[in-house]
Amino acid sequence: MVVKIRLARFGRRNSPFYNIVVAHARTARNSRPLEVIGTYDPIPKPDPYDNSGKLHKDIKLDSQRARYWIGVGAQPTDTAWRLLSMVGILPKRNFAPKADESKGSVNAGDVRIR
Amino acid sequence: MAPRLSAAATPLAPVVDACLVQSCKSKSAPFVRSFSSTPCQQKMSRARQQMYQWLKGREGSEFADPKGGPRYLGPLQDQPFPLNPLFRSQPVLDEHTRELIWDKVMGRGESLKAVSAEMGVDVRRVAAVVRLKEVEKQWQREGKKLATPYAKAVMSMLPKTYYREGEKNLPHEPVNEIHVHKLTMQQLFVPVSESRHFTREDAAKAFHDTMLSVDARSPQPELINMEREILEGKTRQESLAKFKEATQKEEDKVARRIVQEQQREEKATTRVTTDRYEFRFKEINADDVGRNGRSRKGTGWRYGAPFDDRKRGLVKIPTSVP
Image 1 (cartoon, each protein chain N blue to C red):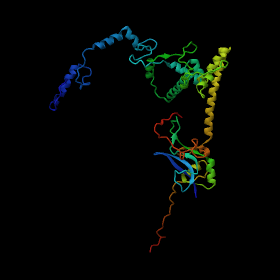
Image 2: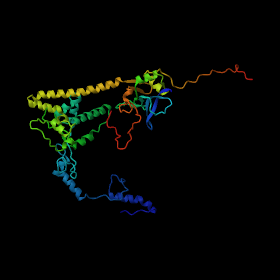
Image 3: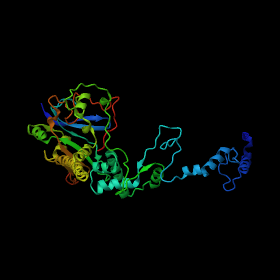
């Protein structure tokens, strides 16, 4: 069975909080995973007593375990890949939608219509 | 009472208004509150007259502008409201003293306990004064307008204590008060052999196994040590210097610990800045959850363990500030 590194959504309504888990691919999202290797708080927060308006996101991660699971073939989901690539565990990948390839223009003379 | 006007009599309304204005005889602002149908009082009532008489007299004027601190009406000296004997107005530190405390702690770098012992102000109050003064200074730096007239007015209504450097001062409050523990409020009869030296530690043990002695529960045990040394024959100056050194050392230790904690935190954190937010990756140990995965030390939401954040009867307000 495929082992995945993915997020499990906890928290409350409108205040998500994720566990970064290693789990079998076909188990339910919030079921007990093989291992919890970290957390991801997706809500950006300012530092206390900081009026500059800069926001940060807090992530906890056991990078040693993450490396191990990648090494034995665990497959990160796109979101997990994005987070793990930030600390250099995985190479950077572009998840943005691909730009439309220009198809080239059609010459009327080249096209033969019977 | 003015007669109620019917709908047909509406054109009369201005006339009525004019009559009311006439009865009030207020020439300066003729149409102010013209809707009131109560005639103005022509004469001052007797009680009011007496009040003004009393205020102008010797007794009243002493209350109105007292010399050297406020005077309260109550039967007791610190009772502002005559009908509320439970409300007592305690003296507060005056502005100059608070500024001095802030300067001693932040400017000259004296330890909180030393300042507390010297000025006769509780350590917690010293810390609170420093914190509030810091907030005040921060507001001044930010250009925030302070409510100084309000503060002055309130301070003029309160009894104050002063501390002037280089003078003989009265203490603001006792600084080494010991909290009366519930367990010590019982009478105990402990048979002890006459030959035994029964100390405070033994007394605490008699109340409860985990009870600490009075010396250990005192907020300023260094002060007790200082007095002991003086009794043993050291000079006051010498032991005072030793006391100051000991408290300074203790405070430095706490400061060092906080710095170390911050450094450790910073070392375990990787900051990745993107175009939108800064991501802070903090290194943790996945094994902290324990063998059954339910330890409270573990990271993240726990599986198979209740999370009582919305349970009835639990305090949801944060109990500490970052």
